[in-house]
Each structure stands twice: as C-alpha cells, then as structure tokens.
Length: 261
Image (tube, rainbow, N blue to C red; front, top):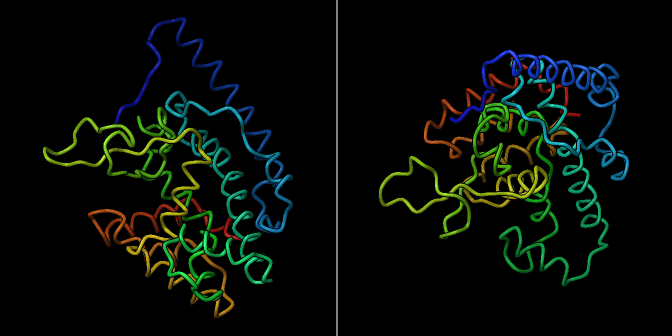
C-alpha cells in the first residue's frame, strides 16, 4: 500500500493544518444537515437530477487527512451520492422492465450486457438487474482501497480492487506473481468504478449466491441489507469466509446499514 505524506517541515505543517481545517469544515457542512444520510429519507425515490446535485465534483486526497474520523466522514460523503445515483438508475431500469416499456431489441441488449440467455424471462432479468445496498458498497470500497488511500484508488479511481485480464486493459501491479496476466483496472472517475463494480456483482457467475440472497430478501418483503448480501462475497477474495466476516464487521462497526433505505 502506497501512502502519500506531506513533507515534514514548518511550512508543510501549516499546510496540513489549513487542509485539515478545510476538510473538517467541508465535512461538517455536508454531514450536520442529515438530509444526505438520514435513514428516514427514501433516497432511491428521489429524482436522478436531485441526486446528481449532491455529487462531490472534487476528489478528496484521503492520504492527506490525518484524522481517521474526518477521513471516514469525507470518504462516505464522497461515495454516497454516486452510490445513490447508481441505485436510482437501476430502480428506474427495473421499473421499465416490469412495466414492459422496453423494446425487444433493448431487452436483448440488456441480456447480452448481463450475460443472460437470449429471450430470458422478465423475472429472471430482474434477478440480475437490481440494486446493491450502500452499506455493502461502502464497506468493500473502504476495505479494498484502504479508505481511498491506495495507489490504485488515488491514481486510477479503482476503489474495489477490480482486475482485468487482457494486456493493456489497466495497470500492472508492482508485486504481480511471475506468469500472472491480470492487471488492475483503471477508471476515469468514481462513477465508472462503481458502475463496473455493480455490474460485476450483478452478472458474474461467481456471485450467483449473492443474487439469490437478494432475491430471497425481495420475495420475503425484507430490506436488502449489506450484512445479508456480504455472505455471497466468498469468491471476492482468496480468504473467503474471513473476507466476508471482515466486510460484515466493517459494516457493523461503522453503522453503515443506516444507509440501506
């Protein structure tokens, strides 16, 4: 993990103090109002345009934030609006599918994108095309990017440790095993990173169990939660069940399920 620090000298120290004051002021102004994070607000029913207004345009330099509490606050504030936007887009698409508003060509294109059989039923398509709870996304992003401080998050907007497998598709990790061909995927923005992460969990056969858990929650009228869906993440890392436990612990410790509205 590469962590970038300011030079230790009197001038740099003043810069760090000023930066921290600015970060704290920014985080406080955004988080004290509870309109962004309130568990009583149904964020997925908001208009996409209103959600877009909340997106933080300037990417924070997380490695420059020394306070853990402030770093977490800024991290959540940076990711949450984009997560809300993505889930709102998916809910809108689900509504279009359910209400038969899409043409046969559009449905075929979706089936191809989600690696579904041609002519798949509407119900089967909706199993794949569904939201991911914000708590799960936030926890994995925090875990995989070291709270936004990893080299791949800072330089390539890869917050989820996503790999690709064709030469030149991303950037070669410095400690890649001899003979390995994977590269770390690069993205032009946080939104692109979240888009691909969500698509990966929604279409990759490895996460069939995660989608089954989600469907079961929907069928039973239960809230789709990160703690439940995390059980389907055993293939995400070599540590398997230990990885699942770490994500669940991160969700619980940081009280992230308050965002699963």
